[in-house]
Image (tube, rainbow, N blue to C red):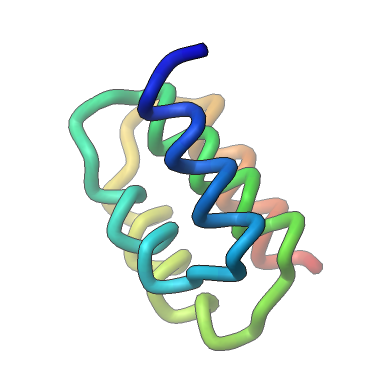
Length: 73
């Protein structure tokens, strides 16, 4: 198992919203994708402003789609 993937799982399991928000700024697209999916799954409204900023800055269409769906929850 990839260490970065296990870190995202850990952050999600611990409801570490700030850790997941920080992961949205990582260079690695897969980390950003997994962090966005975790934030979507948690659905904590405190993350909405950071998700909006990440959506504006995100270039990857797959990550953008996950971020947009996180705003719809």
